[in-house]
Length: 462
Ligand code: PLP
Image (cartoon, rainbow, N blue to C red; front, top):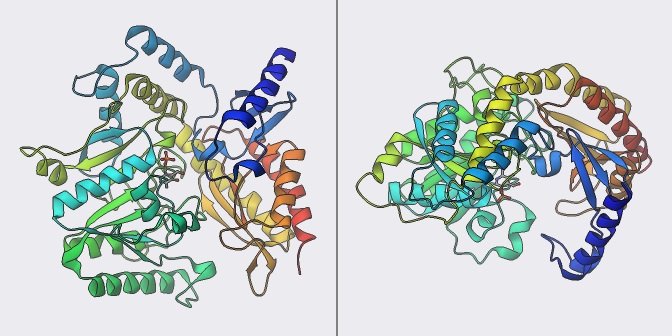
């Protein structure tokens, strides 16, 4: 242990000298050394054990150091550590089969990328070439990645300083009842008004100019706003009416997070009466393209991709697809994905995520909401939940401004860490996002720590 702590100290010193960090003012950060991880836990630079209730960036869907996956990576490294994308490779082929078999409809082919942002870049490129159109519509309160196009698809403040006004993106408002911009009183109104708004925006922008509508099936970092029943079905209808490609970004929501392989599988095709968990069997809204990354291999080796339906794949049957990457379908990454998908299946992790959501995490968070005035709303499904914190319950004034932090949020995050838990925090929200294979006791431990952190949050109420 002391060797690991010394290594952590050296990692910290070298980090501060040489590492340039994402999204940060470099002089103002203080990165926590992590010296080990196992299952739902990590150990910090002092050797202290912390519950990873963030699943890192909501990607370690099977927890840390799953032996089946680390063994598969080691075995693949011994056998064939790398191979260029133009060759057929067993790890890549098997990975593509396993994904194609789990996506809805006829999304039968997979283009592999290195992560989520480039998956979205390629999905948009495919949609533009398939339709011959340029504009792309995405919602405010979304995150689609950090590369130039993906950050412009994004509807959050990280886009602002990256937006030069020529990306072809058009943003619209999606459903979010708690902060409804449509003045809705219930989910059905919110659904109908959000769909009317989208269709009006399509009409005014010019349907013949719009290549794609891109939506996170359940927006993640932006706040885990589960779409109301009928919304995704309505978006599918709008896309069909105007020949627009429907792209579901499942980078964060996919691979078990919502208690289904893909979050879109929570949404039935009916405009009314089916919604979260309303989909049955094959009655699932089917997008034309699904982008994925993160949970596909629990983040053990970088991997992302686009699952492609037959119509779009056919566009590139006799005309070359103008795009590629040196590491497309890298054997270490795809071998890790094969082992991850097999482990998720054989250990029943998808069902576990659904059960945790309905039996433990959901009820536990609702109980916290009832006892803490600072909780404006809790919402989510599976192992994908947000706690929306407010300074004033009546006005819903957020506990930190949109795009910012606050002394209150900093105190809440610090309390979580002091009590042995890593939270996922964004603006005025804490997300409860344990791995899909978290145990009941681990989730209860996380809830108990959140209870203490919310005591602190309550002291900041107006
Ligand atoms: N799309 C969504 C929904 C995401 O949550 C993320 C990352 O958080 C991305 C895309 C970008 O993925 P990556 O960071 O792997 O490029």
